[in-house]
Amino acid sequence: MKRYFLGMNAAWTTGEMWRHFFMVGTEKDSEALRKYLEEKYEGKTYLTSSGRAGLYIAIRQLLRRGDKIVVNGLTCDAVIQAIKKAGCVPVFADVAKDNLHFGAPELKKCCKKYNNVQAVIVQNTLGYPAKIKEIEDFCNRRNLVIIEDLAHSAMRKYKDGRLMGTVGEAAVFSFGKGKSIDTVSGGAVVIRGLVGGRLGPKVTLDKPRRSLRDRLYPFFTVMMRHAHVFHLQKIVAGGLIYCKLVQRSADAELNFRRLRHYQAKEALLKFKELENKKLGPLREFYVVKNREKVLRRLQEKGCYFNEVWYDVPVIPKRRYEKSHFPEDECPVATELAKKIVNLPTWYKKTELSEAKKIILEEEDE
Image 1 (cartoon, rainbow, N blue to C red):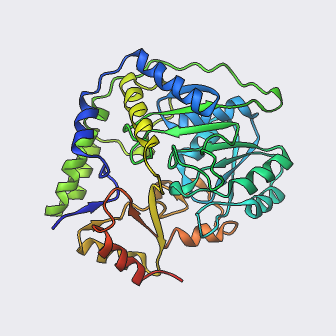
Image 2 (tube, one colour):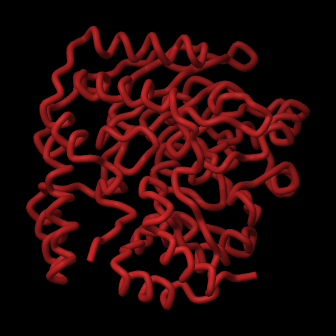
């Protein structure tokens, strides 16, 4: 029986795995990626060790300490970590059911409750486009900074035809595991404008560290996927994490190092590959009545889709309590996080037809 996975580099081909392992880069490759991003997104570009580092840089360049920043009601702890490290305060806006993102009504409600809101992070959850025009109009009226988080949505377009990342004052990319541009780790930020002449501290990035762990990660994920055959996935994954051969994405430290040259070369290849593709969402999402039941039925058919974005409003679950997420202010996000099921988009639709049928049978109306 063929098995299907949401995480663990399941989207990578064997060729991509070997390409990643043997990829060699130089400073010219980093400069080529920087130039590519600056031309496409029209701003000053920094290549970083992670998406959260890029977000931190964007916030420090565009905002002042103590400013409040509106964050999507379904998000990642890495976003919260970057905001707090930059000395700002995250506030959450509830989401709409159709695209897992806030629009102008949710923004208005959030800004009415909190004083000193100065910025909005638009993340285009799972690659589904946010309602950018109404968000942009609202932010323009209030003079709010828009930061576009493209971790899920690199090279995708809004419904009005504009490329995601070309609307706000900054565009942030994550090249981490499972993202739309995946080089195992890394990121970038493009600063498109300075509001009111604001300019943060000079950006200084240290040299990157060598990491055999990042080189080998795709091979370790093959081991973890094959372990499902013998029901040993938890033991194998736990052992790799314990031996520090695999690092969970959310556990990465917020450091200020440059992107490795070989990852810059790999990222540029992937950007150019996406240029020639018709891109939909990074994952398809469905809302079901009983998620645990659906996931069990899917697993019986060889579909291991338990790595859900989002099983809690602020992932990962082990850090959720520390996020102090206001469930009463974001009831839609809170409820959706109990019912969302994701389908991968890198398999042929015919391969997942039975899985989709199982999900639709339990879909919440």
